[in-house]
Length: 100
Image (tube, rainbow, N blue to C red; front, side, top):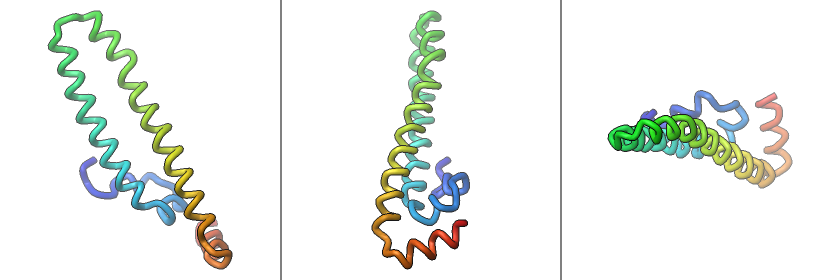
C-alpha cells in the first residue's frame, strides 16, 4: 500500500483518465488508515479490558473503512465531474469515445 499509485489499478478507466492524482493521494490515505488502525488496535488490546476490545473490534474496523470509502467516493466523484465539465466539448467527445 505504500507504493505510489497502487490504487489506480482498481479504479475504472474513466477515473484513471480524469483523477489519477486523487488515486495516488487516497492510496496513501488508505495506508495511513491501516497503520493508525493497527496502532489503535494494539493500544486498546493492551488496556486489558476484554469488553472494550470486543466493542472496539465490533465497530471501529468496519466504520472506519466504510467512512473512508464514502469520503473517497464522494470526493473523487465531485472532483472528477468538475474536471469533466471543465473540458471543452471536443475533449469531452474524445474522452467519451476513448472510455466507451
